[in-house]
Every structure is written in C-alpha cells, then in structure tokens.
Length: 116
Image (tube, rainbow, N blue to C red; front, side):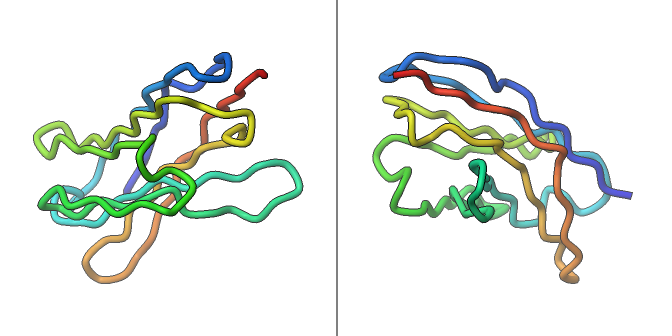
C-alpha cells in the first residue's frame, strides 16, 4: 500500500517562500513519476509540476521561474520549493505518485495561504 504524507504548508506573506515535503512509503516509489497539484476553493485541482525518477522536472506555467521540484530517492521524498509567493498561490497542495503500472495515489494535502 502506498502512502503519501505532505508537510510544510502554512501562512506566508506575499513575496515569501515555503518548502513543501512529501514523504512516500510503498514499493517502486523511486522509479515512479511524482508530482504536486493544488486546489483553490471553488476551483478544480490543477497541476503544479511533476518530476521523473531521474530528477527531470516539468512545471505548469503558473509556477515557472518561482517553483522548484526536487526529489531524494533514498528517502522516497519529493520537495516543492516555492519562492516569490503570490496570494493567487493560496490553495491546498497535494502530492501525487503514478506507479509504473499506472496506479495513482494522493496525499491528504497541506494548506498554503499567502496573504497580501
């Protein structure tokens, strides 16, 4: 069974930074694509970015130049470094993993609130 646990959310002023972590447990995590998504109130869940097992990251336009995704395969953990945060970044941030055979899992989410 795969479990994902996010941490690091909180309240920050506009222009500030936060670093989210997602610790994964289960088999084949290190060879799976992982990613971050977010969902603001009243909105659909949207992609923030993904990272391959080899560390190649791709980002949605909303975070390009401000967000960095990294991973530590030895710890089965991925990170989301968010800089120059804007009030529009306020959302619940979710970690996601897609296993090699297609099964997908989600974390419980962590709240990020950016005040203006």
